[in-house]
Length: 262
Image (cartoon, rainbow, N blue to C red; front, side):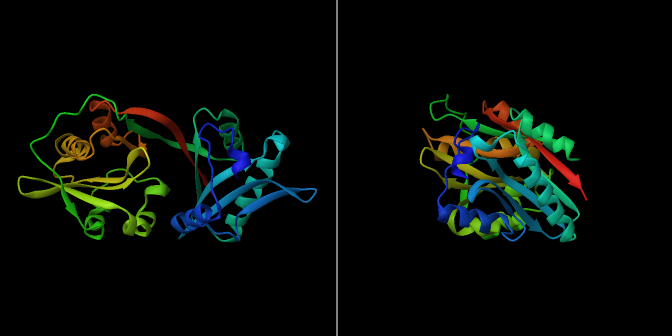
């Protein structure tokens, strides 16, 4: 996997523990996933995750010396066959917009574009955000995800779905925002080496992304001065994206979420 992704748009480096954690967080099914071999050497891998009747494909990669030889297509066909054998209904994946070859392959295999997902970042040295009158209160992570289903207008991507978040709760911090004495929003965050990662942000429909989303992000920035803030795979049509843009976050990664109905 490390060799396959060494020259990718977003380089990836994992060890055995990190890969095991990915399997745990994202419900990877090792028996339904595949590796490609040639002359006894591993030349590629592709992972299949399962939740109910849905599947998610990730980490599709081929080592440089074996590319453009049909290896990725063969692995994808094997994953699709495995998903059918398991009685799954839909297979989803994400592909970076610049990865035109992979995008074309997935289209040829019958996947269709569903929506655009955006990763946003506010640089550590960006101009400070306005300080809102409302401040965040730290909360127990389990208590805030109780609002998850009702406080997301757009369906989250696989990596930000509730099953994933629940497995992260022991390693994250949670904050809530109140407006007019009522709960208005929450966020789950994790400290990275050089940034603060927003793992999830929920906004009460009673207030919306403009009234609650913007002060939530502003107050979070105040809690972490001189730290970059990032949030991955926000649907482009999600009102939260408009709030992020208004606060001068910029898009670092654009991905297509694609789906194949079996």
